[in-house]
Length: 422
Ligand code: PLP
Image 1: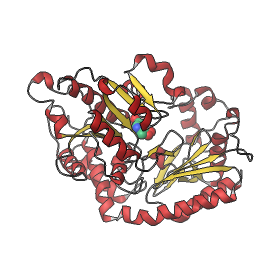
Image 2: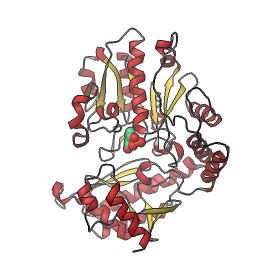
Image 3: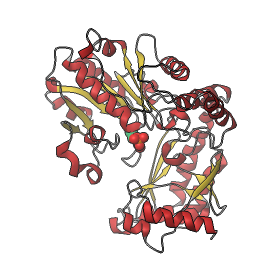
Image 4: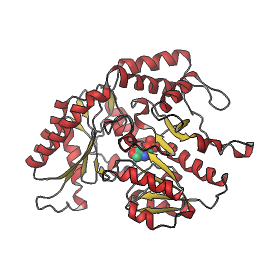
């Protein structure tokens, strides 16, 4: 091992604290974390020079590949102008351009306002607070509860975490959060007393952290109709599904749904910078006018960071100049075919689930029973897959397949090689 790798590892184990990570196992003497040092396209290199395929797009963020010359140039150019100026009290050129670009994806007079923040959790947090305050200022202050779906994941800040349905992550904080009803289906939602509900939130088309589980076709459209009928807001969390992952720029396009709030982050900057946006309608916006008291008192120091906005604009430009969504179509078909083959070839592949260029490969025992939780089969597979040059992560025993959109069809073979070695 190189001396600098050893020093980075030691400093990490001495001082760093990783997300979602039991730290005893991480800092154990025999655990040698990979130190990621370089990237190009869909590939990453560790500090020892070993090459890996970025099988989960660096936690669902990367779109056009790492180290992309156009994105690098956008960052360089912006940093030579200015890296950051406050958005509190000032506008900035890139934020104005980006807001204009984002609203242009939606029909006129629908989503027409953009509120910037830093990450997926804050994009959701903003939508929640805007919805609550909207009802306070619209004569319906009793609308103060949210509805979320079972097993949902919407982030880790206190408000967003209240909407999370994964008990291991969120249960211990439940009593500190906002009031939420969890439902498993539209039918269950229809049973609730709708009067006190401010908004329903959903990950459209597919729930990510719930082991990549797609919703039934048509569900999103029906949910929009239900929310309209019951007079409650619909918040779409497209933090994972946004920016082409499901085959269209946004998942909601596929069922011609426009939400009251749209939460975007992760792929917004092509996976380069932490930036988020919450889009909302003119109708919501207008409820915040009329007096100083009505303003939305919320913000972060790096709101609308110019570097983030510049690289987001460049990433959206690449969708056009590189014809990303057109080129993705045959890759999605090839992924379906590939997953079908994997299921036939590999007895431990119990089910494959796909939505666009997102998939989950669920591993089970040969008799179809889940592996005992203690075996940590998904985790063991992902550690072993590194030997075959594949980096991804499991959600329990479901292996995430979410390559950057720039990947080649042939890159998927790496999963076959890793699974064969099981
Ligand atoms: N919403 C969804 C659907 C997500 O998948 C995630 C992260 O995985 C988040 C929100 C939270 O985003 P962040 O990790 O940027 O706070």
